[in-house]
Length: 252
Image 1: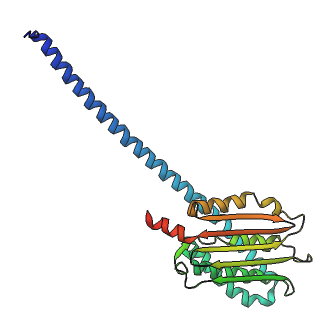
Image 2 (image 1 turned 135 degrees about the vertical axis):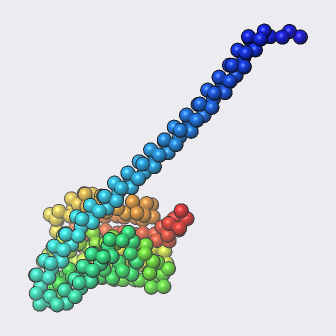
Image 3 (image 1 turned 45 degrees about the vertical axis):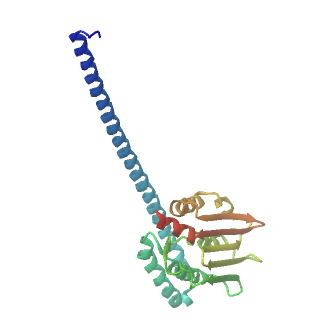
């Protein structure tokens, strides 16, 4: 048996030790880089969340003053109904100032607020005007008292209907349908608009994009939203699958 020279043996041992040190160093470096990448990813996620929150806050900041202006205009134009309207207004203001700051409210509270908001705006409408509101609310629904609805989610449709309807035009109308069942919340608003109304330009505009962005941030794919115009009839429809959204919330 041939034995390696002592110096060669030492070199081999030194090489093995060097390789062990390098492998250990590389492993530690990879772990360190992995931790840094995870921290950077977490920071980006946190930053993205803050940006989204700022966008929602911006949405609320733009929405609320607009609501106040329209509400006060409605009261001023119909002084004889001021007492009744102010009573409704008090409920609306309480909701905007307190409840709407939460991420979610109960379906019941959002529906009650929507009804009050409609009543305030109705004071500008002639008794002869074709205005219809239908509600089909299952109070036994597991979601009726559940905090699962984003506040003010339905106001965009109703506000646009009152804003863009020509109340003097023949055959004009506003129809609002609100439904809650064991699975879904749905609101549909239909109104007749004048041929030159600016609402035609808004179906794909900033307002529509802001609402859809807010819905997608909150409900992801658990909703459908559509806005269409056909023969000067504007139809807005929002349907939220509360069952699906609730399941996702509690599975995480």
